[in-house]
Image (cartoon, rainbow, N blue to C red):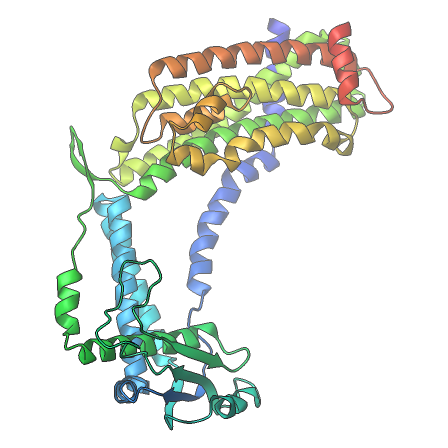
Length: 480
């Protein structure tokens, strides 16, 4: 046992006392945290300057008066202003709802300030478009011809909109527009939009929204309805869900339902894969450099493998502790610790040990069987496909943790630990017996994989030459 701990301490120091580990675990996340705000500051949502005309063929004769008021530089600026204000309020409300507390309020205020700045930039750079009314009976084909001349920077006609004859009044008088969503327009027609090639989609999207609203207002006016009154009748504020806790009422949003399980899953996956990949790399390096033979003169293959796994497990546990600590500090800062049940942290630790021993056994077996990282790719492919499965299915499992898929994968090694941490941190945690059964299956799986890995390790560490196939590894397990 003393030899095993000696190997484990050596492996832990060789992994954690390096610049690569420090940069990978600490510096890179900090760099990403600093780079993201810089990238957001450099993003420019303002469309390129556009100068030109918007030609309108209004076959109804009822929409053009409204467009003469709205398709002007002043009208476009008002439209952009309203859109920016609505987006800012929606973004701020989302932040306040899902983050909650002082942090949510601070983020919401920051969203509003950023949106206000973006709004001013968008209004200042609003496209300088001029309305070009055409005759009601103008030829559509002739009106399209100027769109093919030059490019978007040359000015001239950039957009052509043809409002169809029954866009305001239905084809059959007395037929009301259907609002059931089944696709029946109730006899109403729409409009056609033609643009010059390579015109910025934000520009013709803005124009299209203005025309759409103008047609709707014309329809309401023709039907004798008041848009403001109808809007007021249909507006109903949806209350935010409030979770009732012993500490008081807390906000409860849809994002929390996904973020928490995803965070638990990523914590487990990163910590396990960090230790597992270092174990694979160190085993291959020591074998290729013949250091393995020197080590085997002092310890047995089983002691060497056990020590290497324990050492890398300590490195993975260190990663898990650091990141979990940062997450807890963030939750405390946001006054959101109520989201986590303390027992979930205990289960996270238990499933870490189960997942790590399973993955580490596979990595140690592969590393001992090859002498080069390129040779390991063939054997690692099926292993990585299995380990990536819970990552790919994370969202479906988090959204429906009681589904048959989630339950089956909860008892399917070696993905069981990853699936269970998603489920225990979800909105519908599994029954205690399912968690206990998954732990027992995980322990049995880890023990079985360790025994198989030990047999492969005993033979593989001293084998050189052509890398073995999966079939050869199975023969080694049966022989040892």
